[in-house]
Image (cartoon, rainbow, N blue to C red; front, side, top):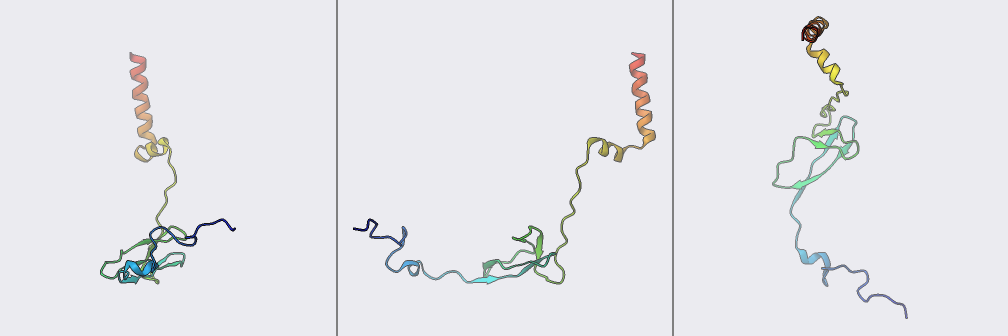
Length: 110
């Protein structure tokens, strides 16, 4: 006797007609999106839905648009900045020297 189940090859919820019992699927439209690397993705949307202007490329993660000739530009990635780099953006060397001198006078005067 070969041990097994009498319902092998079936799944829970599947009746005698399988997927046909569920009825017709909603009408769909497929929209092509291209990223700046030339990858095409074709997600499907409901026929009465408005497709988005941008879609994330599933291959590289860059933004993709519906216009193959003009895909969206990749986002600009800024490098990590230290606290000192941000301070130097706001203050000149002369400002820094003046602030340091003021702080030293307070310390020495107190």
